[in-house]
Length: 312
Image 1 (cartoon, rainbow, N blue to C red):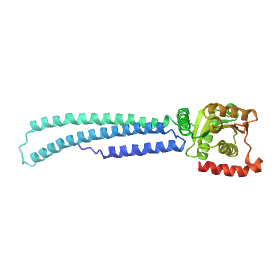
Image 2: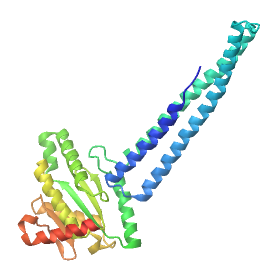
Image 3: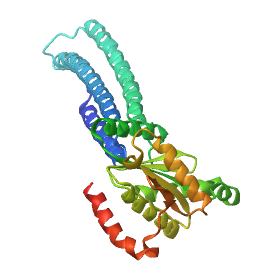
Image 4: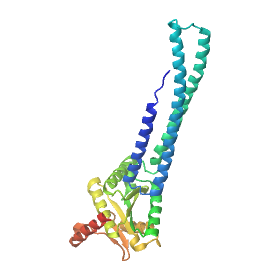
């Protein structure tokens, strides 16, 4: 009875590659929480080491068992060819000795399968615990961890960042009129568009319900306002939906104020002013961000600000 364990090595390499893909996907969706990613990688490495240990144990057990089987087979061949007296009672005893480790080996393989399955689920959960399954954006846990990291970078290195809160307009009416499945579809399409529009360094996460938060590292409030207006316009033109957005930046509020609250207040002002608007808050107060088409003078500023964001 021979076993081929080469598949276990391939399986381990596949899991390693799969985890690399998951981490890459998280980074593309905005997971810039370095400390959390490092912890996940450490956990994944520990799991891969456990896979290797399981494979090594099975490989050793199979090699020992294979030696016993080969020796028994040689003795049977010698007896059948008359080169050795056939002591069938002895063969029977030896066959029983081989049967016991065979059953034990089968039990080891079954146990190893259960362990591999369990640890594979842990690898999958490393992604699922940080990604909202409906929108494909980060979830609240990922956002909270990322925001803590952004705050730490600001406190230590004065790395400024902007924060925007987005809310789908009249979402309750959408659910009541067209059903929750249609509402879920709206959320999913908004999530897809936001992933396409955001930079790799941005953190985009579903904050709760129909609200989405966007963290933009090293982005001034003017650059954030331009991005938010582009998001609002694209959602309206491509998805036949409207959203309201509020934006704020550490440039004007530092860490003495809750930036999330400030952005939320700007979002509230956008809704109060009629929805389908972007409002920004800075040291001059809270005001509407005008679409580029409505203010020709702003176009040149937008270009310079976009270049500034790109450089950041």
